[in-house]
Amino acid sequence: MPRFLHRASTKVGQVPGTPVYVGQPREANVEIERFEYDADSAARETLTSASQAAGAVSTGQTSWVNVDGVHRVEAIQRIGHDFSLHPLAIEDIVHTGQRPKLEDYETHLFIVLRMLQWNDDRQEIDDEQVSMVLGDSWVLSFQERQGDVFDPVRERLVSNRGRIRKFGADYLAYALIDAVVDHYFSILETLGEKIEALGEDLTENPRHEHLAAIRHLKRELLFMRKSVWPLRELLNGIQRDENPLIQDSTRPYLRDVYDHTIQIIDTVETFRDMVSGLMDVYLSSVSNRMNEVMKVLTIIATIFIPLSFIAGVYGMNFTFMPETQWRYGYFVVLGVMGAVLAGMLIYFRRKRWM
Image (tube, rainbow, N blue to C red; front, side, top):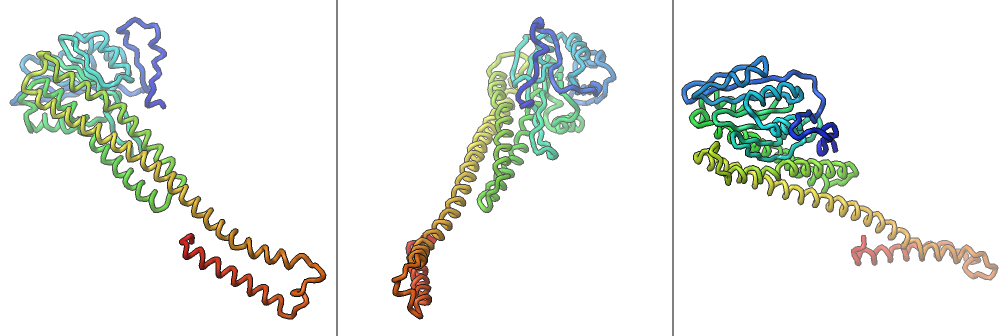
């Protein structure tokens, strides 16, 4: 539940636009990285203070300032002030429980994404809010902690691969969004492999542990659905918006990311149906196993009913019972009981009850 709910009680009663950090407590320092590039060159630098972020933006070049750590509210406020960000945007940056959304503040676009990564140790999805601000020649990105999925974008900037250094800040924002969305596919591949393996194991040997595994997969898919569904609305809004910050040359690429998002949503819904089907398979397997056990016990009880009747008749110990005085009576009764047993087994087998 902590991944679904963020404790925002500290914001109650605050003036709108008041930045209050809402998220996991952190002690790490804020790290700021800056890329400044054009078609001919690219420079990468680690900044030592938030006051250097705005000063790093040079005329005629595109700048990308990436901030790792939003728990230092004063640093985020300083950057927001230097870039003239809207107070509501600054508030949403430090409130890490935002859903993916797009806000148009005229001079800049504010975008919130959920960056998801698979944690092999805990076998679950790690969630992190990524806030991006698009200006006329700059992009700001704010992350909760170090470690992201933007290394391919950094590599393309340094090596000048593709179109990224020839296009403007809007294409850089697209590249960052595309990196986040593309990483969803790797998570879906991991979840798909787990669903397939669980389905095979469940069919062969259903166990009680499978119930916990099914519930875990359902929870992870629900969490991913919550993170991806609003992204469709966000990308659709960027495409339809006539904001001059988005160039016409970038819109086809945004449509491509939109198509990827639809594909991811369809895959998530398919996986949810498959996991629900696994629950039905588990319940059916448990029920079938119980039915098999009950069938065996019923056959055993049915076989012993006539044998118990015969044994009960000759256990009454009446004085005038002819068979009790017969020399071969005991063996004859055993033979009759054996014949009854064999006849019932043959009958059950012909009826395919066993």
